Image 1 (cartoon, helix red, strand yellow):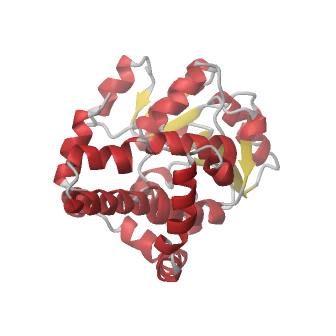
Image 2 (image 1 turned 45 degrees about the vertical axis):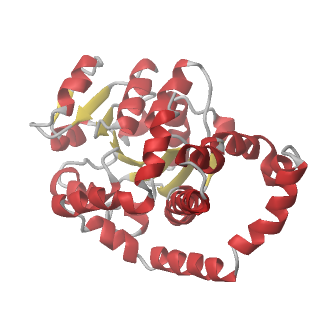
Length: 315
């Protein structure tokens, strides 16, 4: 009989970064038994212990003792963690819970045929997941089932989503493929890569025109959260109807010129690189030296004057 028949299965939370910490605490407060799986020498063990997470084990021990194994380690480590620690330890009839579809869709993790595999992917970073739970408010989240051995994988995912504070009405069904591809493309082309490059280009254009860096920052970056808030509440057209006539006219005239056919072709190339698995393979191959180089390269998406101006207006 499948172990998932219990009303509240034991959860192994592999990793205790921002998201893993929030999920573990929310599940604990919802009455679940949570095992935190971390390497024996991890400094994060002290944080977990100070949070009251008393059941601390190594990653392989946690995986062996749990009915649901949550992959809260960074995506680029999934393949190695699965191969070396979780795969040999996971028991038949358990369930694998992923926070993103990447490692399963791109076959960096190949689950055995005798486990359920599902995804619950909150639409917020860990801090917000915890804050919303404590405030008795629900975020939205993607939910998907990749493998349903028990016949109850979706039900199990929905119950765990409630345990972390996600209302059933805020769950959006998807697939591992669509979440993986959509998430990567959104981050690269719009939310992180695209937005950072657009802000920096706008800032540099105004500074070259003679505006003080502080003024340029306030014009192209500081008010961005207000615009995003309007988009989330009313949609893009609704946002445009709620800004000034000057801003509305300028947006209608300038937007299509900025995001022209050349930019759309570039987006298609970015999407093709994701679809082919090329980006996922590059991500998986990151080692400590490559991660250090990555951190050093972050400045290419910003500007020293912009960063100094931003520090002046931080709340």
